Amino acid sequence: MVLDSVKDDAGTEKLVAALSTRLDSRLFEPHVCCFEGSPRLADLGRYLHTALFPLNRVYSPAGLLTIWRFRQYLEQNQIDVVHSFMTRADIVGVLAALGLRRVVVVTSRLNAGYWYTPGYKRLFRILNRFTTQVVTNSAYAKQVVSAAEKLPLHKITVLYTGVDLAQYSSSSGDLSVPASLGIPTDAQVVGVVANYRAVKDLPLFLRAAQITAAAAPRTAFVLVGQGELKPDLEKLALGLGIRDRVFFSDGRGSVPDYLARMSVACLSSLSEGLPNAILEYMAAGLPVVATDVGGNPELVADGATGYLVRERTAEALAEPIIRLLRDDALRSAMGNKGLERARSEFDLSAAVRRLESFYLSAAGKAGIAVGAQCCD
Image (tube, rainbow, N blue to C red):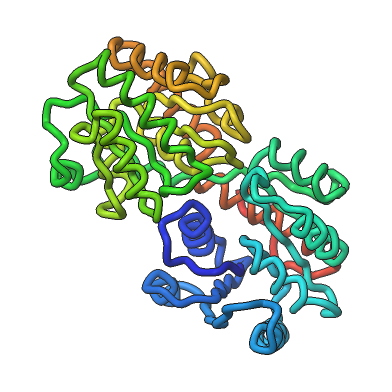
């Protein structure tokens, strides 16, 4: 498993750390390889093989040397499957495995390709010639990848991710963490879990918060994440007259700490693959209000576990939030249905089994012998 790093708490980093430690040790010997070290990578070293390949620029003498070193690592450790999870890792993984016999090469597209440029499309079309399979995390992303990269659908596999339900149960979370931000104890909390990046369109969330605050005076709003856009978001909240109602976690605490305090969970993104945030909302038993983009409809049952917002206006996003804040029974019913769906379809253990089956199938097709059949 190859990626830039596992240092951040973003979706992919957390996912790889969770999946790699849960693979059946009777069938798999996992290795996590990163381009940047971190405490989390060091901690993973207690459970599985880890390796660090420092990399700043792929297209440089040092980058080519790193690719060569990684190729040697694959040969020395008799790696059967190389699975990369980020763009730089895709490049390194494919190039390092070129010419190696019976090595399955898997690359990933874990979003809806909002960052695609003509250059990236050309790059991936070249890499795809030497790739065994491309993995996406939503059916929507599969269609986007196929169209953008001119890749046959049979060469793309959708692997839904999962969530550790126990980690997000109603009894989880340290309520003193959100309280330390100054959130009033009697407030109804509306939150969004997203790093402060442009694609998450947090200004839309704040403009909807302004409308919601006027209709529901006891409401507080929390943005769980971190990023360079925080000063801009603070300035916008001030200009909207709701700065005293808006709170930023700025990386403090963990996601369950904040979900345990929320009444309604939102996602205002411009583009998504299959967002971990919504999986976490469902696992915490929260009703979801999300924009109707990417793989969001594959998670949110509109009108049953939450609401999908099709119009990108503050008014459209605020309307279902206000409806849920005013109706305790509706909020509870939708949250419970979301939790039921998470249990039946998106439990992390099921995601691990899907990944194991995928690896075994790909290895078998490549003529790589496996020692046993995947467990139930």
